[in-house]
Image (cartoon, rainbow, N blue to C red; front, side):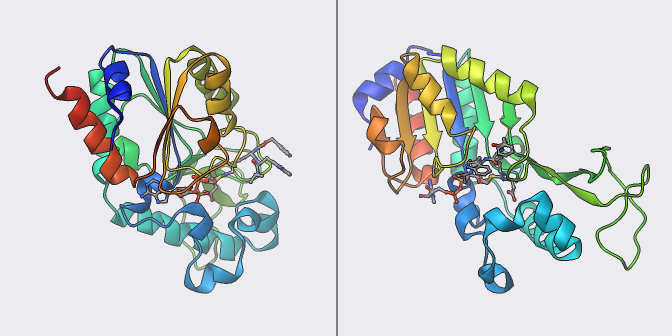
Amino acid sequence: MIPKQLIDILKKDPKVVVLTGAGVSAESGIPTFRDALTGYWSKFDPQELATRRAYSANPAMVWQWYAERRQTALDCDPNPGHFALAELEKMLSNFLLVTQNVDGLHQRAGSKNVIDVHGNIDRFKCFDHNHPVDSWEETDKLPPLCPKCGSWVRPDIVWFEEMLNTEQIEKAWDASKQCHVFLSVGTSSVVYPAAALPEIALEDGAILVEINPNETPLTRYANFVISKPSGEALPTLIEAVTRNT
Ligand code: BV8
């Protein structure tokens, strides 16, 4: 499943950047983003719900959507793919994990050098001033209100048409430019600016590896394509690279 040439490259302690998307958490039981809508939510488009506009129009409903997704994330466990990436980090002297996922599973699996470019569903801030919020007065009204300014509490994640954290995306940008190997794992590669990271890595001569059971717009540019679930492919990759090291 893992090309020998890729194993030999990874044995040479290259600079590695990994970009993950919702596919990495699929085997943990978390629906991927574009099928994150089951049941009641099935009549909504996530790209419509994950916006300031939707929150302004229907804060209680969108709060509930995130509350259910948060509970799912907290009830799920990291899968072998998450643990394999934590292992890969330990094996390499220069490694960065950039995740689009907001579920926190990489950190729970032991990954240390992680940038969660779209935020974390279990972190909160306020709608009007981005005040960090870690507790609030429980009332029967939702969303809860910011203790500092009284505006709605919201998840500390990046909605569509919101800017990503400049420092974070610049760090991810720089690492992608300098890396020798870029692994794109479990992402549909359609959401920018995260989807630009593998493009930058390629422009600067990196080897591009894609791990995804399905094709994406990136597939045709990849040097290595592993069309398997990440929970299977990543542990196999680690095992191959550590074998008779
Ligand atoms: C920005 C948090 C500047 C929220 C997310 C027009 C108007 C306005 C904006 C735009 C526009 N055109 C383009 C844009 C920019 C826009 C964008 O890229 N849109 C796309 C969709 C066209 N980007 C933005 O808005 C970004 N901000 O650009 O600011 C700006 C400012 C003002 C105006 C314009 C621009 C902000 C983007 C961040 C959005 N927030 N998440 C939440 O979670 O609720 S993004 C969301 O999509 C998730 O974070 C998710 O991670 C991310 C990407 O999706 P994927 O992770 O790839 O998940 P997906 O389900 O799509 O795919 C899963 C993949 O896994 C599949 O390929 C599948 O095959 C694979 N898979 C399945 N099982 C497995 C597997 N792989 C491996 N193993 C398995 N077992």
